[in-house]
Image 1 (tube, rainbow, N blue to C red):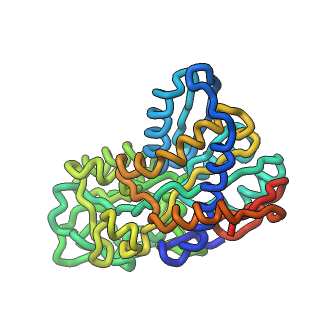
Image 2 (spheres, one colour):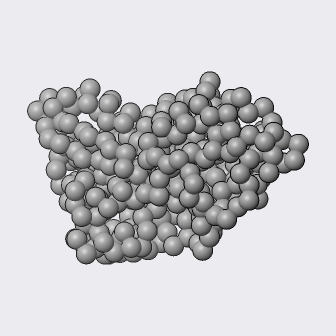
Image 3 (cartoon, rainbow, N blue to C red):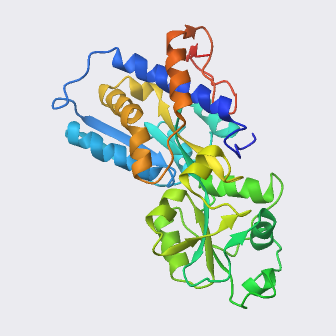
Length: 335
């Protein structure tokens, strides 16, 4: 499966996901709304540390209206989240990439049916230490020289002879991270490998502390973590373009603009507390995504999704963002 690299190329796929999400919201809102004070239960969420700030913000606000519903949000990484989700251990999985074929096969084997919901845009940000006054911009080829396995670049001077001989120390998400998967495919492709001498963590806050405390440090993670830590970190322009809301939304910040998702178990949706949470997420998630530093989907996505709700039809399986059919009893697609 090819990972989405730019916003323009996969836009029709994101529109499909948005349509599914809006259709889901329509079906939820047709039901009698639960009494907020009487509704109770536990909602288990795990997955991407990139999507975590959005989901955590939604969970916090949801808890104010539904105080008897407990929502737990973990950060085991996109891959780690899917491992739990596809065996039924969680109700919702945060993901910074679409589900992979093997993960989907595991879900099918365990009779886990789901809906994929795009929630925001992200710009994977390359950051360096604040004291790094020599590196303002890098090309994708520069990143390959730094990050690919077998590289001879160990100091900043190895990359540019006019730069100081400060050792390069890399801080990166772990291999269970969708952010790592995305970065690896952009830099190494399907057959290449990323160097192993990196300091890794599934917690992006650990990576922030690592880069901010090391003059030669370089790292990467979702834009929200950079925006939140501008006073501690310096973003590096890629091909002359910095991660900003407008460059991310338009795809100018290429090839590191990407959509973010949540995956919702349809079995869990039968529970009123999960249905209420998903409804709340769809209604308030876009604004909260902006509040925590991400970019909401273009209004056209929501407009097209709304129109497609009126023209929905049955008899076809749900599709994921990469066009793969999802096995099971899901029977609706919205065009």
